[in-house]
Amino acid sequence: GAGVSQSPRYKVAKRGQDVALRCDPISGHVSLFWYQQALGQGPEFLTYFQNEAQLDKSGLPSDRFFAERPEGSVSTLKIQRTQQEDSAVYLCASSLAGVETQYFGPGTRLLVL
Amino acid sequence: QKEVEQNSGPLSVPEGAIASLNCTYSDRGSQSFFWYRQYSGKSPELIMFIYSNGDKEDGRFTAQLNKASQYVSLLIRDSQPSDSATYLCAVKKEDSSYKLIFGSGTRLLVRP
Image 1 (spheres, rainbow over the protein chains, first blue to last red):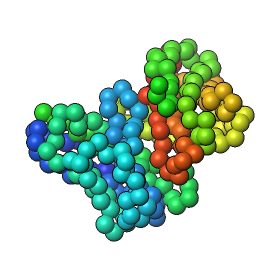
Image 2: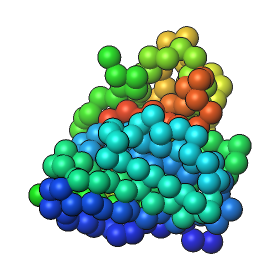
Image 3: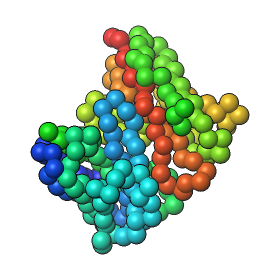
Image 4: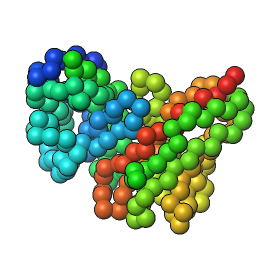
């Protein structure tokens, strides 16, 4: 079946603009994760969903970041009033329940000017 | 001190050689360890995971774990130019049932 998909693949935003990033997990995957990857760094955890429940949002860097997964499938990461330091690749990953292996999507490369 | 440490490299090896990638972690209670490969501009791709002390082999790849030394490594035998990528070490901590803590990655360059 299809892997994790993300859209848009690239996004250029002006500072102060709101953006919404979408993630479609692998069908049947209960767990969904968002990570932020800065250039030359490893991915850093942002938030985790199990079905529609957001069980951990400890990695969200500020209250400008908000994530949701209302029907337990597609997830959206929203960033309000974007800042230049938000420029990064945003990766979504999913996994089966009780299975630790996470599969990553292609990422959304966000550039804030 | 970062929770997961990797040498950023680049590690340069000739084609056919063994590439040895190393990773140390700070949380002694860490349970599970993962190696991901990431090509430039692409997303991380899982290569191997290991839970128990010792070696785990999969084709040309061998993961080694030493919990006493808080050390995990990845060996790539018969390195190929197509193995040139950044290798990310990731750790699942004891107090977390889900999130992964990643190192910054080691860039591997296999010279033809």
